[in-house]
Image (tube, rainbow, N blue to C red):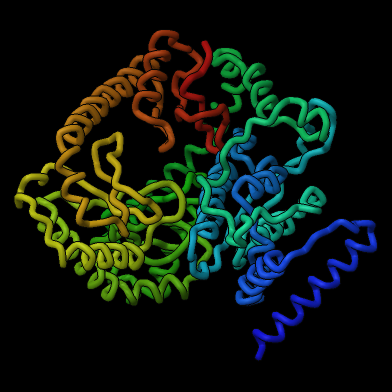
Length: 522
């Protein structure tokens, strides 16, 4: 009955269309029976779809359109513009990765409803001027994504950051002629190289031009040290009592609670770290029985409470003592889950020629133990029925990690395999065996590079009389080695007695640590 009504309304619409065309002077229009049949077939296919699906298709955006629409947002939060603010830069980097992953998942065919994702960005406040930016600081913006299509997500991001949405007026859907939403494109946040006339015509600022200008005015190391060495030395001197207090608190708590170590995921200042340890110390005095379960664990201060995939206890810095105490009470159940996780790793290793299943902590939100167990369990269930025919010890000197969101197994430059948790397991043994020799070569090369890097760091620290020399996680071994060789050649005397961190930008940290780019100019 409903289908008949839809057909009748379609015929009426077709008749109205003919009358309008005729009234407009289209007297010679010929509409034959085949045209009517074609029109009705198209109408039936379109009408047979749920209204919600049609609406979603009308609102679908392609990856390119989404990137274009988000250009003002990327320009306001791009980490490259936060070189002097490492903490804000790191927050924006991590949040951009999560946002891009959210957008990519929305474009995947047959995606399911995504979990709400909370994001935090530091948004630059700028004043528009020709050929320059006058920075007036930045503000922190937090919001939760709970959208179900790309267009709504883009609008939600711009609205949450109080950014203009005028450029999105009239944005049309990129759905294909068959009514299907656009196919999943490549990764979001791809750099787009617009012609220079685009910026001249629209009035938008050219990010590439601004970065080039920033590089041109980037000072040499000697000039920068001349302007900042005194400030760094003063900050480092004033931070000495706080560093000693931090060392004392850490040693005292490790001994009292039986901790193996205390670590921090983020580069918080010494004063901030002292406050976190003092808070834990107060809890140990107020509620000592709740901390018995910590013995033998590594404690990590991070953004959430729980246990990570490496078995380390995570304390969320925004949580209160009551939440910490509840976590400590649940540690026995976490240890049981950790044992099951290790058992799964052993079973997978036996099925894949003795290859070690490892987990590598990366920058950004830490992987929880529950998520790690779920991924291992799903992979083991896929692997078990096929039981790959591999010699039990043929791959025992190699390693692999499981990672979601990938479509094929790849060999990392450090020598371990990155295996998708939802990969085709029948092809996996062939891939591992075919690249085993290359994996061993890369492992040996990495070990050699590590030894060379350690020796260069030691020489730099001794010969330049540095108080400390380290690097950020984003700096690779070849980059660190190139920086050390350059330092040994130039031997800047202003670095004596200072704490040096090799990074991608210049900055003086609040505790006096100096950050220099690994490719600094002499």
